Length: 381
Image 1 (cartoon, helix red, strand yellow):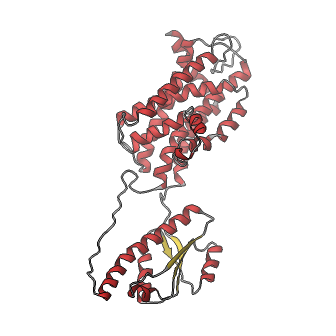
Image 2: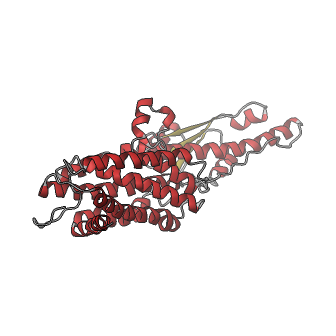
Image 3: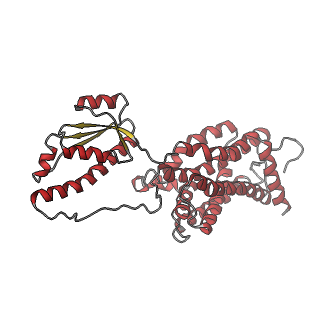
């Protein structure tokens, strides 16, 4: 117990004595909680400039244009008389999409045929192009129901609409990009900041002291100190930040606490094991920052796991964020029970045990390195 307490206190002293480690683990966590979501504060792209080319100029085509004005995704700008002029507006960056109403649009509908419209969008910004096309499609779908009634009245058919589509999102009710991305990236941020700070401390100690032994009790105490800090950081994101940013949250509090505890329990020995291979702290920063985005894609949220090679999926399972992100999203944003997140929880438990054993092996008294930098040359553990 004395070794455990010595390691716990030593880890905290080493952390707060290193300004770079404090900035990485504590200050960066606070800054990212406001800085990263700011880019997605609007949640969804809306009011994107769209130009209309109305070649029909009929009452029905004008009704379609009026319906476009009610769609939140697009904002109609000055119409153009030709496709060439509309394309020039897009190439100049003054419009993101084009709607072309073909000549004879109203005539074809009243004859029982299909009126033709064309959607075009610039491909430079794919997310904006997709939003414009989706908005135009929603407006035309709503207009088509009214056109069917007009067509039925013109031909003497019954005028009741047979089917109406109603869409209700279950979890991300605002259908916002931030609610889908930031909630997952925040779990990665907690790992990367904790990993970077711990590796900086280990690298500093390697530079100053070289290879030293660390007893199991002292090592467990040091890792427990970092676990406590990482657990607090993750709860800060899952609690205050999600509430402040109005992200989906609070679906399953006991499950959240269990997932957070297991996730950080896997991250801390993972960081200690990885840090034992770095003897220069600057090299560690380069490698960890470079791998942040690949780790997010390996989690299978932005890039589906079904589209990944099997060997890459096995590599992804070795990183705590893969199971941690999915588990936290399930229990916190979607209200899943612990039994529904059992595969991810089991993976985290295995990673915690596996990396814990590897860490003890790497820091064993025969050839280990202490992750606690001390600047005096007389006190060695």
